[in-house]
Length: 299
Image 1 (cartoon, rainbow, N blue to C red):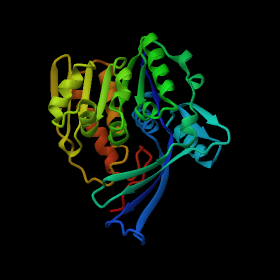
Image 2: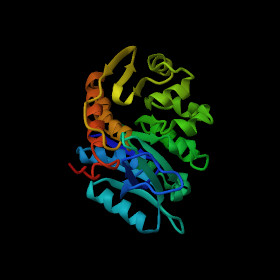
Image 3: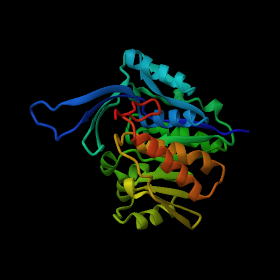
């Protein structure tokens, strides 16, 4: 039976501004502006479906044009929708400023995402052999924390595997212990270097990996252009990043997860899992926007 992937997290629309020079504070800075669907869980769902996997997105949207944009995009990539429409609310949106190095700074407004409730979860569809991937934003938001924990509990009870992406180091730093309960329930943690440091209080990525591997069966630490490292059952592997011209780093981690999960759920070795993840991330950063339908850069 083919595994189905359920992705739970914020659903957003990204307004991306690509700038070629430092921002001119209190004045104008020329930019190339595009609008495209985003949100960590949605990005991973679209990349999975784009690669031929069975993906279902769990989240919330508003009854507005941005919500229509999201649902149309999911249909384009054959992502199954388990989205709740929150009447009178606006779909989450994020201003993304991408600098001349391709690095992004985000200004998110969660919008309808905060309206997601436990009763919106499609837990009756959970079954053994499937996988739940949770974006940490759901747990970082006090209003939706119970939803994320409920989904994890139901997934474990259904015999599914589970994974977590901490999502963002800055909000996590306010209360690193907020993820402690979730770490007890997951099979796989995919964190970036900054998030791993916040979770452990350890700046060295290898030592942070070892510390987290004592709490979660499989741990991955993403190191951007330096590649990634992972540990499972005492075995550690390291993979270099794929050289590519970086246009926009938005969603690189989401694409990385979409590359890692399918071979991992099949029990493949870490070298293969990290290799597929690195390839997926490289495809993402070479384009403007976070998903497979993003804008190809002009030559």
